[in-house]
Image 1 (cartoon, rainbow, N blue to C red):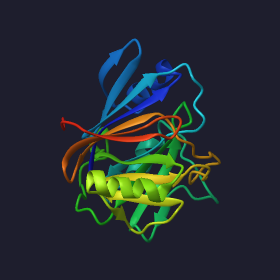
Image 2 (cartoon, one colour):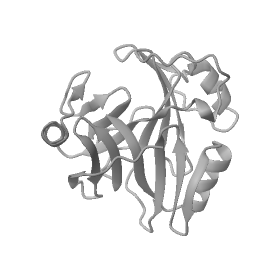
Image 3 (cartoon, rainbow, N blue to C red):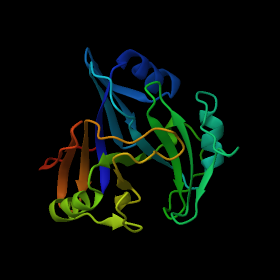
Image 4 (cartoon, helix red, strand yellow):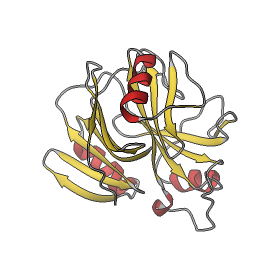
Length: 230
């Protein structure tokens, strides 16, 4: 699975556009009175304006070169304050063979840079915004993780990666994962409680192109769609 575009919502478009474009230095590919869109490697990230106060926060992970976790942290520390837990900034996921660090955007969304050592994407180039490969994870809080896993198996041909549980299951592969978590679960590296949020995820999957949507009420829908890559 590859995540081609993510559409999320925010009440604070001006602050968010400034952060993603000016602070993080991401390419601004579209802006309107009610939305903006930036490019993160091969993935487009769009925020649409809402007047509603969202009940939780989004979570996105960005793939970086597997050998540049320290370089990426040094690069981003000039712009953001990484989240620390027990005095540690970089987290080692031994089971996933990966290292990550986390930070917040102005709306409280949890962003992650992740170096996945199983992927052959090491780089000798100096780390920059051009080093981001793609959004490789989107958090997807749901009421019934098992039911959504079965829906994704049947309608997308995508399967769990690294096991399955009733509270947390990653569906897809390391280039693109939908992180299914049970509503009410605490997001890692934060005190934020996960809740369904309005989001649309455009993917290239085992059967071609699809769009997965979730409403603030937790209603999940999957549609066939064309795949548009940068």
